[in-house]
Image 1 (cartoon, rainbow, N blue to C red):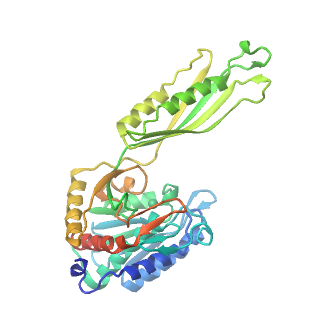
Image 2 (cartoon, rainbow, N blue to C red; image 1 turned 135 degrees about the vertical axis):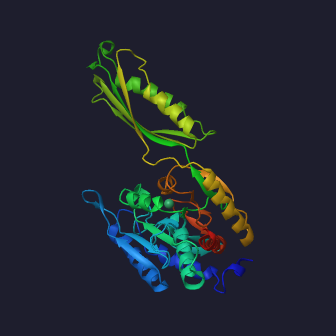
Image 3 (spheres, protein in one colour; image 1 turned 60 degrees about the vertical axis):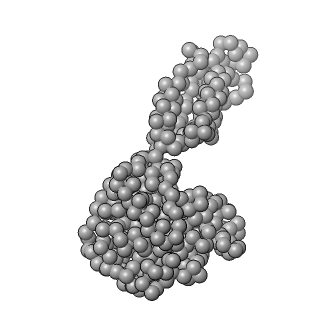
Length: 386
Ligand SMILES: [Zn+2]
């Protein structure tokens, strides 16, 4: 079924898996720019060999002393600078060098392949790159130019790539992001909700521990607010609050006049997130003699809502997937990832990578049999979008 679209050159499961293996075996933690650049070298060489145009942008410092890997743009030889299809893949992973030799070696068990970053997101980056190379070699030119941007610092929030991602998205007609598929192969058609970090500072009054009635304990006050914050959790509706760090006081002999807590909020539901953030901002002390101050830092990534243009793009992809032989389902994903940057400017589909599970863990894995159908879907999108 898949074969009929491939103009004689088929995607081959073993060939794709071998390619995924070779990318996984170059370990690329975000913090190690030299390591990331080794994979950039390989992609650049392979892209040139396939007849693509390439542009490499040297890694930059986000803060002094913290440099990230190079960014790489691989483009179809046709179409020049005109608006086209933008593919965004990050090649950095959360796994330190040595994971491959230790906790998560590359291995294949039946229809499952394991390895650091294989699911998030080298599998997706490889199939999109393979589809682009195939398009250039065997099918192209397509109606639109295709530009594939390889990002080196997504796992730390894309500090040095965000500007280029947005610049490319601004002039794109469509954007496809190759983050992993979710939950049995579902793609992502929105990433909305909210994220925030809270910093609570409590100021009481110190006193000798032999006369605590003269003091006002900041630790006691904070303890009450920790329980309040944790009670705002609403797992059913997808609101997660975690008080992750606390501190306060100086000695058991002193009623503490200072205490602090740091917490995170994470929600799939923007309205619920905003309501909860407003509650935290408005926290009042239980003890009127104590001062509490809540500082809120909102997540840097904008929300990504499913617009009518995204629905149209999704329907098109859905039809192509049906022709290939699988049903494409679109879901809302959590905020996070470069799609939150691109969707402000162009209709974006995310989760275009292979099926699997275990991102950011030593169980990270992909479903091998999902490689060919998803590579084919990407190729068909490149061929038909216009
Ligand atoms: Zn990712």
